[in-house]
Image 1: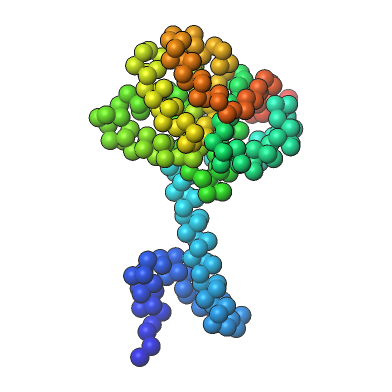
Image 2: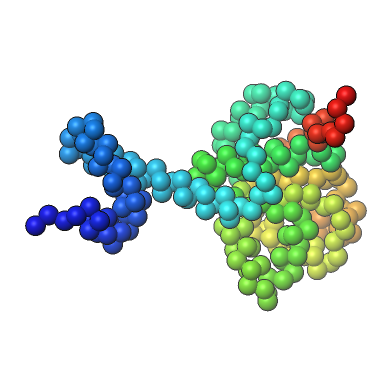
Length: 250
């Protein structure tokens, strides 16, 4: 006795082939329209399952990354700045630096495109199969200080420590006390040669010691951050001002 399409869909769900179950009616229609062989039908069915699983995996990792906005790398207009050449951007997009645990430090004034570039690289890294976390420096310090007793902080930091790429935005924009500096050092030590970091800042690493106030601690942090690193100086005109939307038309 042959089963109905609905019964076969339920069997696929029991086998945890949820995407195949959902798409089965459409696959059957295509198979009939195109006179697929059994082998072609199975090939299309498995390809569809894999593709949809990958799409859902990317969607989940994008949610976990906690980007402040979704702006793919093509929205970074390299022709409007001189911090990177086309060749250098292409090299970054090959992500060998990420596989080798290199860090990237983006320096420049507010509005220079540092966050836009870091988010674009992070989104593309996720699409290539990497796990990424984005956090501002202020948020990170708060998470580290509350990890012991706030479950949400524990979950976010667990994902961050498991990430292939960690993006810390606006690093060293404010002073840190001794406890905050210690917690930050411990995190950097845990990530050292395990994950890559993209750091954005409007202050050079030479100025970071003044903000921490503990030269020995900052030296230890810098030793790990600058061991394998590329520093990009983005001192061009503010991207936001250049692309501002006005109320009054000229």
